[in-house]
Image 1 (cartoon, one colour):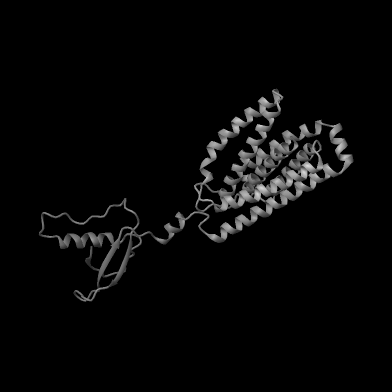
Image 2 (cartoon, rainbow, N blue to C red):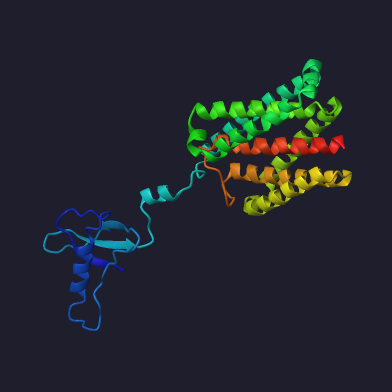
Amino acid sequence: MKIDLEVSEPVNFSSGDHQHLVHKAAIKSNSGKLDQQPFTSSSGDRPQEAIKYPYPRSRDGANAYAVQISEDATPPNESVNLSGPFENTSIRKGFIVKVFVVLSAQLLITAAIISIFVFCEAVRKWIIAMPWFMYALLPAVLIVIVILACCRDIRRQVPANYILLVFFTILEGLLLGSMSVFYKADEILWATGATTAVTLVLTLFALQTKWDFTLLNGMLFVFTSVLVIYGIVTLVVRSYWLHLVYSALGTLLFSMYLVMDVQMMVGGRYHYEIDPEEYIFAALNIYVDIINLFIFILDLIGR
């Protein structure tokens, strides 16, 4: 629609000052036509953008303009607000690099602690003589991981988030080291190599596949609950095949968790994604997936 307007003073089109001019011009143009309704503007419509350009005809010395109004246009500030945190490629790349740096540091610390327990004979004998040490670490690990997972403000606050993450990594390394003394050194090395290979393959798969594993979050939670109940049964019923199936199912479960967490970290074309400020939470998720993969694979190799 094009309407001739007489503008004698500056008009701010972005604030809606032009609406009364449009309304006035519409009534004037429709005067004498009783069967037509005047042009009205609804206050509930989306913000409009007006494009003004000179009109060659003038009236009574005043500049006349033809105004074209587009109802589908969106102002620049609204388009910025609608964009997600991962729309900027540099923000996404910086977030992914930060997550992998933190994750690599965690894995190196864990591997160093496990190596002390495996190759230092004095530490190995002390852990075997003091089995309470491993059980005392369990509640400490659970408390720290609950704080990191549930307290959003703490895991975003520097340096408290790094201190808690390092503390959790050390506790997890001590727990894994205490478990590793009951396995042979070659079994631990095979489990480490297998975990590394599986992690790399699943990471590449998560980045290349068109399947959206982030939609499986609820199903994986149900699968985890069933696996926990199955694990309690295996503690009561001492059966080789029950333990073997339990380890295989655990490996499969945390393989799917690893794919899902990698896709949530990458974001972009997936249904769910992690906020760029939650790099500690993203690194914690992937670290826990890798550690659980290592535990179940080690149990499979040990059997």
